Image (cartoon, rainbow, N blue to C red):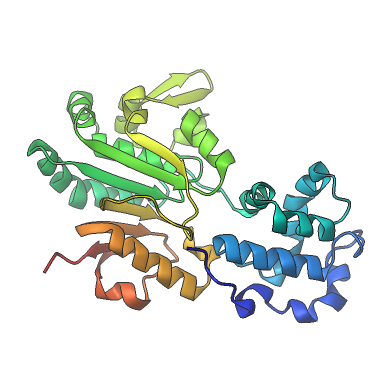
Amino acid sequence: MTMPVNSGAVTHGTVNLGAAFAEALPGISPDVYGAEDFRAISEIAYREAGIVLPAGKAMLVYSRLSPLVRNSGCVTFGAYVLRIREDAEERSKTICALTTNHTFFYREAHHFDHFRDQVRPGLLRRLDQGGKVRMWSAGCSSGEETWSLGMTLLGPDRKAGLAIAQQDVRILASDIATHALNKATAARYRSEDLKPVPDALCSEWTQRQGEETLIAPELRALARFRTLNLLGDWPMRGHFDVIFCRNVMIYFDNPTKERLVARFAAMLAPEGTLYIGHSERVTGPALDQLVPMGPTVYRRRPAA
């Protein structure tokens, strides 16, 4: 499902931007990149991926898309807009370029502490009884969140963790940006990037290779990385025990956030847990299904 264009959300005053546009972008000819080009790109980004681009992002759009404009053979952004309206592959490249993939290991550590103390014990009991565990890192970027979650599930005891990994456990990790997924799948990071990970987990589930660190193969085997637009169709049919979607919805307007959270709630198993970013809140219809369990942690109500 593609979200409809909300012109009030995407134009952000671009009707009045024309006079100030050249001043905001010194040295850039309006014949190459003008206010109308920015407006068109903003509408495409919102329609395709829910990304809201206020007027202050005009330079960001220029800097991120300029290489694509050049590589496409288009001389102007106006010509490139015509290209991406017709070319789905090029349009996908544009959306990937406009996404922000900043993340790091053990970001918002209180979520992993909550998962370890409040959620993990119940999941392990289910596995011991022959059940399955399904988790989803939605908007996984380059994989740091996915591996942090996986390490926390397996725990600091390697023997016990290997037993967990041999059971019916899967982590779906999805993102719209293919370049970020490529890094996530490679599971290789600068060793200094792993510093936020508790030593007891890092020592068991990573392998140091000089200045780089590789995620252990037993953990890599649990994850499935997939390209997915959160505003599009979701091919998954089962429910999830845990969903992480953090610092993704900050780029959406409120109606888009509410629709997305309602979809997450519907994908959670009864008493499943949703983790969202520190500046995000659950509002709208999903409040009928989700109960706050802590800062930016929500649990789906049990089945009636």
